[in-house]
Length: 120
Image 1 (cartoon, helix red, strand yellow):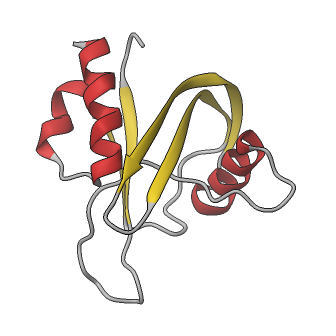
Image 2: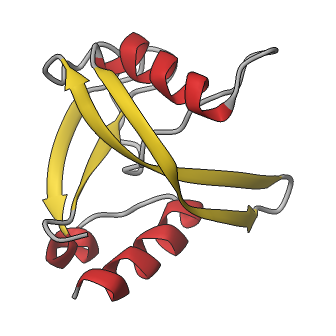
């Protein structure tokens, strides 16, 4: 992970113009899809980009008070397109050194802590 940059996404929910925590892109898996297919579909739908998805980079489980989430991160590159804010208010590329300047969801904070240790 030489030039570490992660895309952060910000979205308003229920048509409210409120700031929500920054988050890494998350994909919901539809019936019959693989995790890789879900990631490709979601990035096309939400960011208008096509990805080349590689191998699994890491997996994280995070327990919230009412739910446990399992996140799988893949090595991926943009094969086609330019990021567009189709479903998000803002998109930012940040470096590992800038991570602490943003307020991320708890599950993402676990991921970013590990990534930051590997890069810095």
